[in-house]
Length: 197
Image: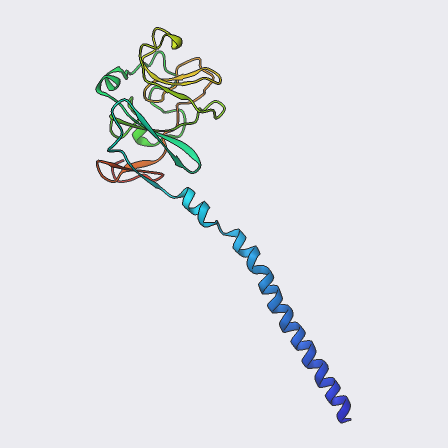
């Protein structure tokens, strides 16, 4: 009888040990699965706001930075460029940026918080091509009425110096203004609206 009690006790012990080891194994098997569900550090960094020093951007030039894997243009407009930005309600498709979702500070003819600096996603709203910056208002290739702006060579969409699309172009909307704010006179934060909105 003692021998059968020992055998029964050993079986019970082995069964309980197997269940505990199986539970531990299941927990260890779930760890990689659960950790794959949270975003990686690289993903968190890519989506994070980006601080840009704009103090070295010369008037009439622009700087390209990456945010969320997309090119963001920061254009420093000259006084002449700013004076060339007109209301142009008759030749622009959406002069007040009211058709598509844009930040409130993009709903003016400059489409910016400060007229001197323009912040745009460098992606055409037609098929996602990258337009080129053509600030020269004497570009004969773009027509005699060209006053500077952005041109998408893929399908011919033209945008003014504020990124507003001209009527009759393949692009359905103005170039997108990403959320941004000024941390100081020389630092712009891309990817987050701020108090200067």
